[in-house]
Amino acid sequence: MLRECLGSLLSDSSDDFEVLVGNDNPEKPLSPEALGVCDSRVRFFNRARNLGELGNLNALLSEASGLYFTWQSDDDFYAPGYLAWARSCVERYDIPDAMQCSFRTATCFVSAPSCGAIEDELFSGPELLARHWGGSAPMMALTGMYRREWLLGIGGLARLCDAPVAAMSEYLLLVQLGQLRRVVYTPEVLVYFRVHEGSWSMTTPDIAAWETAAEGFVARALPIIQGPAYEDRYVLHYRRVLQHALGNVSTVLARPAVRPSWRRESTFVWRFAKTCFANSVKRPLVSAALTTSALFQFFRGMKGWIRSVG
Image 1 (cartoon, rainbow, N blue to C red):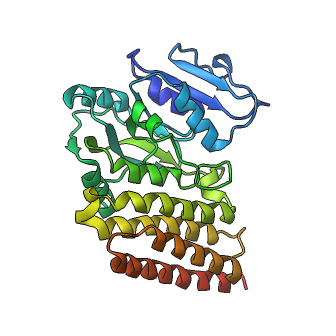
Image 2: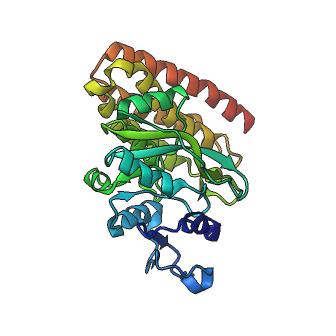
């Protein structure tokens, strides 16, 4: 899968980009020869110790040198023309803050057709985020192209739980994208998200990490949407932040390896509600109603999970 991911990038003939591969397994070092990828545009970083997913992602950001930066998992891949499109956006929109595209889920590698003329549009960050929440602008936060200086300025991906994984960090990045002034978006599918049995995100039973990350996410995301740029669509932004947080917890709770308990989940709901109320200074009555509604739906689902495991 890593070979396929790299191949989808290296089909671009330009030499104005670099690909950084962070290998977090000290026992299995990677090399160009082992992968059959002998290309000066690719740099390998074999970690002396496992940095964890989040540590590795942020280390790659610190090791980069380009004007723009994007993350990608080794099991996902790009459509031909992704880099060419990003390059054209830099020229046509005079160095925008970020660039985002649509994506598609795949179960295996597909040879996507070469992209022809790609239609795109320039948005403000809050406007594009509202379109995304509304369903008209699908995108994956990590695979967006961002000004590297901006990513460094916000500290890279935020740590939202004590686990080494980047749980919910990409969703916070999505909310932070709303702080940008000029973001280009295309509905063209240029990124592919691969679903497979070995994927951590599809199989992890670590409910404690996701519950902690959900709290950390709303603690960081809700203060952002209190700003004036989010005022026009405040209810939409607030509702989607809570749905993302609780939806990810619900997904993990529903997995066979997880045994929900009233005590643990009730404690989580109490902490989650306190965090929401503490970070909703704007329109407190509306925020409280939205929080109550979201948690009610979560509780309804929890009854079903606990009944299913006896």
